[in-house]
Length: 232
Image (cartoon, rainbow, N blue to C red; front, side, top):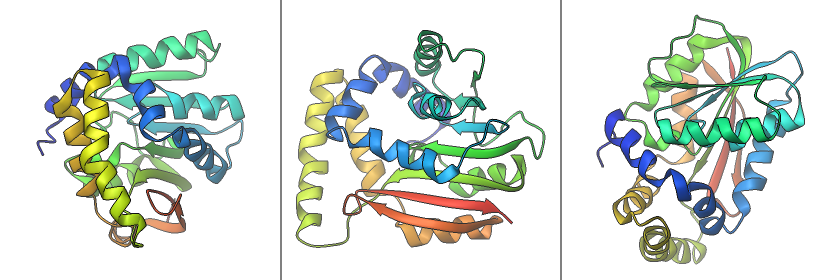
C-alpha cells in the first residue's frame, strides 16, 4: 500500500462523488451510529474548539455541530472531499461554525494547545506515520483535551471473523469498485483495514505519545473500534 499523502489525496479526490453513498452501503448504515458514539464520548460543550482530522465530506464535524454549537475545524488531504464538506455545511447553516482546510495532519499549521477536543473517523489507517499523528494531536490539544478515534478493526471471534474476511476480501472491493468506478481504491480500502494494527497496539501508541486511554470499545462484534484518550 502506497500511503504517500499525494497518492492518498488523489485517490480520495477520485472517489469523492460516491463516497457518502458507499459508506452507507458498505457499512449497512451502521457508520452513522458509530459517529454518534464518537460525539457522545467527547461530551462537547458550546465553548469547545474541535479539530476533525481527515474530515472528508464533513459527516462527523456536522454531526458534532448539530449536537452542540461549538467551533469545528476540519483538515483533509483531498480537495474534492472538502468541497463537498463545505457545501454540506452551507446547506445545514453550519458554515459560520465549520472551517475546512486542505492539509496534512502530520504537519498541522496550528499553534500548540489550540484545541480542546480532536477526533478522527476512519482516517488513521490512511496515514503513513500513525505515531507522528499522535504526536501532533498531543501538541495541538489543550491540557486535559480529549481525542476520539473511530476506525475499522478485524473481529477476533470465530465464526464471525470468517464471514467478515469473506466480505472484506471479496464483496466490499467488488461493490465499491462497481459503484465508484474505481476498483483499486476499494482494494486499497480492504488492504488498509485488514493490515491495520489491532486495538491493543493502537492503545499502546496513544499512551506512548502522552494520550492516556480513557475508554476503548469494540463496535458491532469488533468490526469497528472507538478509542477515547486524554492529553496527560
